[in-house]
Amino acid sequence: MITNTAEEELPLVFIVDDDEDVRTAIRELMLSVGIEAACCASTRDLMDSPLLERPGCIVLDVRMPGASGLDLQQHFASAGIFKPIIFLTGHGDIPMSVQAMKAGAVDFLTKPVRDQTLLDAVTAGIERDIAGRAHARAVQRHVEHFETLTPRECQVMREVALGRLNKQIAFDLGITEITVKLHRSNVMRKMQAASVGELIRAWEKLPTDMRETVQA
Image (cartoon, rainbow, N blue to C red; front, side, top):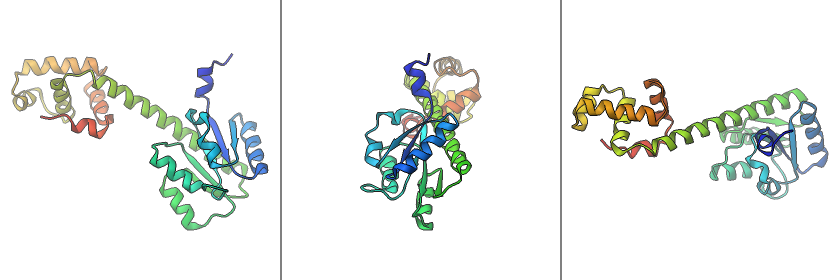
């Protein structure tokens, strides 16, 4: 039996098109290869859906009544929503496709589209979203660990990430080398880093504004 939590982690493809026949055809194509799909007749229906938290992607028409697909893409970007989008339209042109791709679309396809072409784009979109979610979880984990460090430990972590030796760190911070080693050990433990390489990668994944708050 699949739990609610497990269901929430299964990929879901949103099909947003004002043409019911198109929505039905794409949904049946997704289901034929074992991909769950949900249909929306407008961008507003999509924005109101509680299922947006699910991993997956969006197959989105460009021109629809109300807000267009490109409008939705811009809205998501300004709201910090990075759900991968595949545009599928019968009325596309080169400037429109360039705008969509520059804004991060996975692909810009025209109707009618080959089933395999659409499936390949959807697979790429799902993989991008899963990878992005994994990266976001890793960043959040590093942030939570970093927030347990003392101000001095934050300084030591930064210096280690910059490739500074213990004696150099001790000189820069005006403390003994033994104290640096103690702080460094605490940093490794709190950040759950098994090596200096892991610690450097954790530092690099921290948000820029968080790293910039660490003063020498």
